[in-house]
Amino acid sequence: MSQTPSQQPERAGKERISPPKQQQSEPGLDLKMQPKADHGERSYHGRERLAGKRALITGGDSGIGAAVAIAFAREGAKVALAYLPSEEPDAQAVATVLEDAGVEVHHLPGDLRDHSYRDTLIDEAVTALGGLDILVNNAGKQISVESLLELSDEQVEETFDVNIFAMFTLSRAALQVLPAGGSIINTTSIQAFDPSDHLMDYAATKAAISNFTKSLASQAAQRGIRVNAVAPGPIWTPLQPSHGQPIEALPEFGHDTWLGRAGQPVEVAPAYVFLASDEASYVVGATVHVNGGKNQP
Image (tube, rainbow, N blue to C red; front, side, top):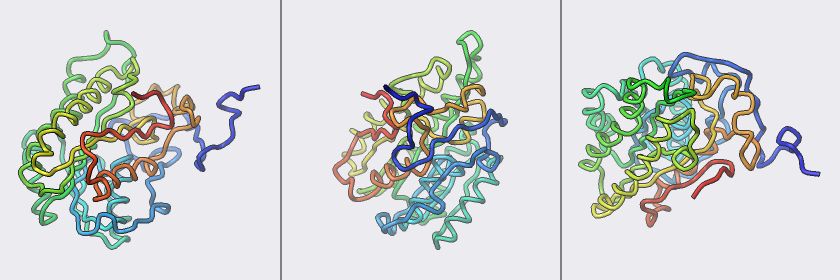
């Protein structure tokens, strides 16, 4: 007899979570989540694969961005974090982990919808870090809306502004400063390939990111710069309880994957480390799927 997801044993060495119904105001804080997400604070151990490299990570205060920042730091990279000012408590918590690892960390708070901020962010990162080798375009806006009839133009514009328009701006500026061997890594999503009807605007931006990644990869390769993407599936981050999912869906979030559970940010970070490292020197225009076995191309 086949087992239902609730009866299935723990798989892949991670505990399945069933978060209680909860809701935060956007953008949400990891510090208020129940349970807290695992960014690899105690479990990620580096091997100096990014020694000497300098990275800017947008959305670096929590969730996938925080896990990437911790992994990069423990792999020897210097890190600059871009995040909303309201996310400062999470950013400080991440910075403590990075500093404990003996890694230099720089805070560059601001709103990617603000053109004056995003137009100067790459230059600020270069000044802070003394150069730039890696850009991780990770910041995202995700708001669940049941029907297109309730989806406002304002939300659509804000979602596109943060998720894809800012990516054009930052990548354009990064191409002017990244050296040959540099790397741009974009966060797309399972939503680009298997969209949920309540995430219509978010899914559309993630599909755009997937295509943008391939187009930019072709151009940037001529400069010796590699552009790739990571497509996470259901990962437990502050996006989910801050209106990113229907509140009633949270207890079973991610239970429909082949592994029967949501992923943790620490499980996504190694994909970014690989793509940023010299081990991926011949990987260009690729999308690494980290989704627990959901449908993908």
